[in-house]
Image (tube, rainbow over all chains, first blue to last red; front, side):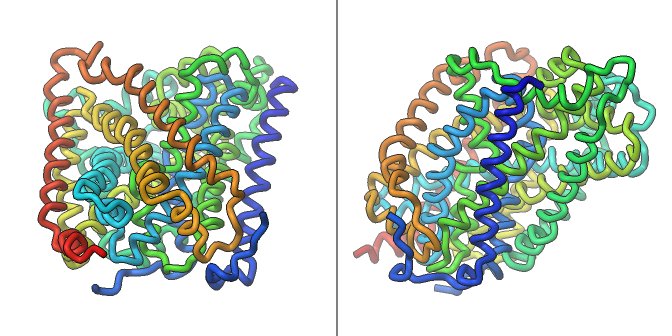
Length: 45
Length: 515
């Protein structure tokens, strides 16, 4: 595998693993077990 | 209005949605597409399609489904009528039932092959076959494509067993059927995939005499970028097609599962989670198993031949052959086909569920009757792709329902949800009960980029593939009949759905009682 092949593989795997991990953390957060109403939505922007 | 079923847990819903998306596309189609379309460079259009098409569409479909479910409509005929106060809306919505169920007519047959091959792996039925030609011949003999009926008794028996398994799960319903199967099926699927991927990555060079034929050069076959391919429209189309296929967006299936959510359940994180679980499984695991192992055993020329022979050949002819050469071949072969069987089952359940939900919601049929009618229809209709397999009836349904129809329907649904229903209302709907907010950049993507991307995709697909498929260019004349029968099946089914929508008491009530 060429150096560029490694770069593409590591960046793709890394990005997807990070996002998947982030989603799993969000799902497992205690606050996520109960739905939040629209007024409680945190505003990030 | 009678109380609709609900998902038992959030994790059950996410696993069922991820199971819906995770299918043969992850393990067979993706590595072939990547290897054929520029290797690592393919990931650039692939990620563009993921960000600008799949993620916005996924959130829209979840939001539409949850919104419809709250008003007693889990399929797009009812959902479109809520979003678009026009007499045509409910008729346009039939595509959200037609497309997945039509794909289900043939997908069940492919699902039954994975069950049969699990049995063959356990019993060592294909042991001793040492060439790809031999394995391909074993596959056609099992399918019985050269027999007078076009199907073998064994293939038909496995089809019946698969039909019975699916019917039993569907009969049990959302929570006790689909959710329960997803709750154990998805973890088993992930564990088996990790096991196989780990075995492949530790394989090294199977033939010490040819050390360059090793797994890491096989990984390079998928990942080494060929930037010259990025100027080719076909590569961008292939990437978008793969994203549609793998994530099951544009079918109307996601709305159905989402309609069984509670009204203020989060969809932002849940929708993103199912996307990411599927993508991780596809890119990290799917890309690590089939093609690298084929490279290690057959070298670059052999792998090109494998990739060009298509995804099904890779799964049913190449993989069993390769796994035979490896230590613990019995265990690995069983694991591979059982993995495909679980993935296929979860997808097939999601493909047929829209019709059950439609019959329950819009015709007010009880669950048992709706399941019996759906399974009866799938059983009868599946005989067309089964008996017409050699003539390409399966490919015909796949093109019209699974490729052409999906691109068209994805465009229609985003126009209805974003432009007709209004962008702000759609955006607010997505954020009801949201655990986090979607970056506002995506509102702009939803309004302009996704519809335009879909329109271009649809037009280019229609121009490139439409005429040749429509006129059956390159098809042997003796195969025309079965292909026309396959087209006729889709048309008759569409007619039946239009009639059902017309007669639906629930959709009539909606019209009469509109504000």
